[in-house]
Image (cartoon, rainbow over all chains, first blue to last red; front, side):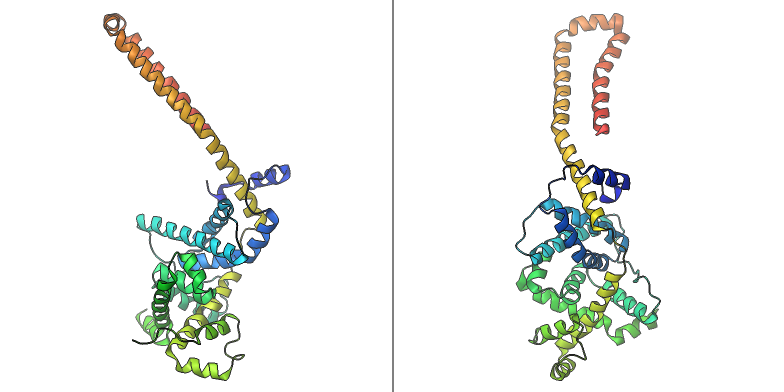
Amino acid sequence: MSLRDTTYSELSRAAAAGDACASFAMDEESFRTFYERTARSVWAYLARITGDRHLADDLLQESYYRFLRAGASYESEAHRRNSLYRIATNLARDARRRSAARGLAGYGVEHVPGGDDAARAERAADVTRALAQLKPRERELLWLAYAEGASHEEIAATLGLRPASLKALLFRARRRLAALLSPREREGCDAGA
Amino acid sequence: MPERECGFEPEVLAAVVEGRWPLAVEPLLREHAAACPLCSEVLTVASALVPDRQEWKAAPSLPAAGTVWWRAQIRARREAAAAAARPLLVAQAAAFVVALAILGMVGKALLPSFTLLAGEYGGWFFAAAAAVLVIPAAILLALRRSE
């Protein structure tokens, strides 16, 4: 039963009844603050590593649910955030494996909505095309390192990598993406289109 | 072996992430990034991904925090109720298996008599045996579906 299957009438009844809450380690107020601070970033991360906005919607809610159910205690806000990203990453990987098993593997090429600005739309399209040619782990690494500005320790904790191997992986992934984003590569893509 | 890391990479990255590149950084850093292949790569990648992240963050209509919270509450309660019912189901299944075993032992003990009776009342015998097996199974299935 996914979170999306919960109807609004159930939500209203539960809220009106104000009955005893399921035991989460975090109270509602703290969760709301944490959610407001992190949800958009996590959604953007999921959308960009999966290439599927609708999947990102589902994975976002599942991530927060599993985060709440984990019931862990955290030393800091950063620790809490890393844990959330780790959960989100694992869920995205599971979704990818399921899609691959059904023969549906692939990176979507959906662009950022609201692209009335042609220049913005073109930039987003360039990034989408480049990310589509990377391996999933490379997308994860690069997004966390260069879009989110996460430290190597945070990235290693999120992706389950050893810090020693992270540098080499990140170096290679960055090199690949930089080459794909270079104007010469883009001209090649346009010529071939 | 070519260098894989430049000491200025974190500065270049921080400048892009914080929106200071290129106008609000030291000219020396700008000159270095133009000349250093590693920092150029950082610049290329970060200059693409940082604004891209801002676009994606601004795009969606996400569910409200309260909605996510209450959905999680309801789902957690459902899962807790299902977990609480599990031992009962196991007990019911075990009782069914035990009943079948007893039935089998009794049947085996009375087999000579059954053989005689089956000859005369075969149809009724099999109907009764089927009812004894099917009815508990149907009840068990209905109970599982109702949960």
